[in-house]
Image (cartoon, rainbow, N blue to C red; front, side):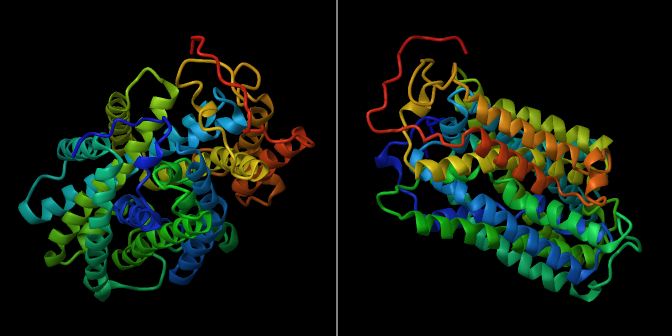
Length: 476
């Protein structure tokens, strides 16, 4: 299979051969990994029992899908990734906001997947073969997983799609066997005696955001990586939207609910999930658990790393996608080492998802608002101005930036950060929300309302007869 040569350039119609079923396969297969499963552990680690954990995860996931799934339609129309597509609202240079948000999201989730997957693999091998469970063995395992991940990410979308189709079947079987394996130890009671935030509802809302909502939000810049390969001439927007929603729903709920189930069975408290998961496993399930940790981690991290390569390629157009992917892998692996040896996994996960949800949501709201205003009509050529090192086009705005959209995002992100609560930081706006983390809602509302106010009465750029971009070179 040849290495994919496409970066963030426009995908030609003849190469847009994927369909809604492929989209479901990639959203299901890529998420059946320990990097997603571990989010199901968060509610029990916060002090919630079975039913509160399930309702928090399901509620947060459904709300998140309602917000993020429509983003898949943007790249269906533009034939490029979502960060580049956001240039229609932010400007062809302002789209760097989306590239940075996407890079941070992918970087964090890649590191988390390699971290948890590597820890489970070392723990399983330790029980099976006597391999010392030390920092050195974990570091080696992180490196091996990262190297395998790079291969899939460099080869690109087609290979990752094939891997996802296999994983969507194989991992479901392995997880189904896991339900039986952990059944004797299962209990509906929370593994810790106190609520993380002191009382039920604040803790439940935190779980709904950190474990449920964060899953779909992780895809706000990723969905376009897949739907740009789907032709709107062959597949309707309705089918693509439903496929996105369904793929996210089953792709996130299956692993996360498995994570909740095993966390309760293994009595995984606030300190760690991987260790208790391996310790509670029957000896006969260690090999399937080892396979699931390896295959699932490579599949999920491969897609995240692929997206990172695209976002880094968008930030530095002179870099090839392959070089950008390798650089992104090195940075992600470095984050794994720091996280594994310096941070508490629960605190790191919670802080990471809440902060990135707060800064990513207003970008998604503004991008979707623009999609509605232009009714899905984009000038695909004008979106590529920055990549060609040229100037002009209908999305040039002011020197390549739409200051109104950028300011709206900055205000929304700022409000979100002021309203967030993490183990490391609590925003001053929490006093106005009764200590409840409403950063997701407030950041989206603030960014969306400011953007609506600043652009009231404006019409979307007209694509028909749009001025042609100049081929004049310009410094990045």
